[in-house]
Length: 67
Image (tube, rainbow, N blue to C red; front, side):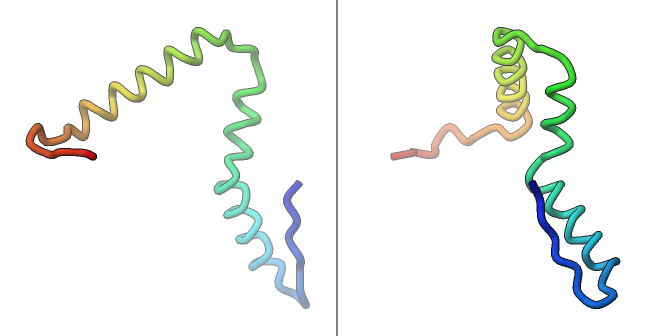
């Protein structure tokens, strides 16, 4: 549960803080995910496809050594 304190007439600021909290906690994203059941295998497949996309978009140099 998100809590935002509203001071004297600071409703606009409180709304802005609430929007930021919702965005940072990914509340809307979680609600959309819970609308329907998704099989674990499909979840894994989505994660792997996203990782593959990121690797292709941001390739790493071959001569970089990671320890």
